[in-house]
Image (cartoon, rainbow, N blue to C red; front, top):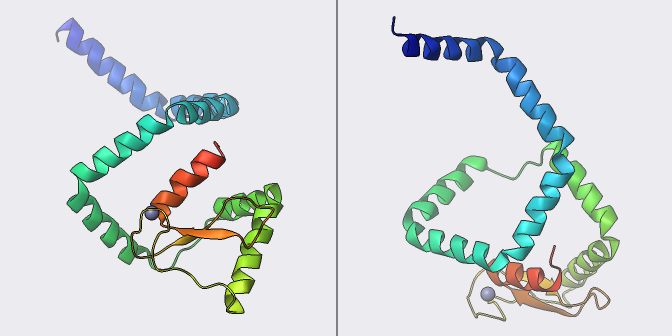
Amino acid sequence: MNRKIYQRYYAADWYKRNRKRLLKKTEKYYLDHRPEKLEYARRYRQDHLDKIHEQGRKYYNEHKERLKKYYKEWRSKQGPRKWTDNQKKANIEYRKMFPEKVKCWEMVRAAMNRGEIKRADLCFKCGKPGKVEAHHKNYNFPLDIIWLCAFCHKLESNKNHPH
Ligand SMILES: [Zn+2]
């Protein structure tokens, strides 16, 4: 056997035998450095927000039909949303972190139930009809809301709260 090929086979075999150990090592490295990595990702996102949005929009426009079909299938397969345990924990943490937001959501929901607030049927910013979400400009004024589509809501929220 040619020496090079022998080495390649040997390496592949060695990798196969040590795969578990290597994966553990990678995992440990990731867990040890998780906060820095998350911080880096967060900062990168913040600094390149326009670029990331631009890329996302471009990709979506180029693959619109395929993506729409994919999401439609995915949604119909998912059925009603099920939260995983980690997501539940994250939700609880989020509610603890931003009690003022939670209070505002609950007040809006209660006012809607009483019929004092009605959900608009189009976005106040871009005018797109369809599903809209309540956007708070200031959480000190819980019932001072405007209705935005998901897309405008994301842009608006990123503007006000950079993270
Ligand atoms: Zn909109």
